[in-house]
Image (cartoon, rainbow, N blue to C red):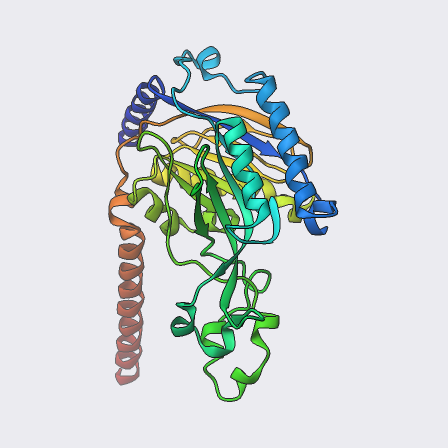
Length: 359
């Protein structure tokens, strides 16, 4: 009875919020070959131009392939007064790019041409002299000029009509072995181990901040890259930082025709329920889509196809959940109580055995 009452109240609250302002979001699912450099193109420039051409086509076609909640569920179809947001998946800008590269300039030009905010996955090189004092010397990458740098699996937020238009997020939760050598920061401190050529097999640099991208009119979005979405505490940090909705940029082409991509999609449903925030997924090969704050699928694309989807995301937020405010306190309490129960049970067993021997 209590759970039904809570669920009904949440549903009523969500329907009221969905009647308010919305954000137009265009999801691009390019379906590039995940195992080929530049997705099978000759260069990252060709990759950008091909994806941009497909995006321009989707913009010209308008909202024909959108999920219109106004028609399907009686929700207001008022257009967002803000610039649209375009989502490109993880690793769309394949390679190792800098913020002042020609490819970054082209992305600024496309954002201005479309009059849209573009969120995209990118392989990003950052030159940072501060790394000198933050990293073990064996983990420092150096350019021929002796400048220190690192390479990140990152997200860029590219604004229209601005020279300084790119904000960045560095992926924090890297897949062990595939994206970063496990325990590198600890292992490198062992004797003789620091003599190994660490930078040749280390993998990506790791971010440490749940950066929130600020769009227009104080609207904030959480840029989440692939494996990040598995970690509920990390997602909680975004929402605590003011994120009104969550954009998951992922490349699930690695999974092939297994259940991996659908399980990854369902992880996002859990994160939506925990945070009460809408989640939009842009996946290279699928499954793309969006999930409302109650965890219900509003759009789930086909896997392994090229597609684009216009969706409207409510920008008013539900109240923060207990999980967002306090973290996984319930899980901690259960763990402590379980530990106490096992400890007490162990000692009761020992005492009982001792008494039987005395008898």
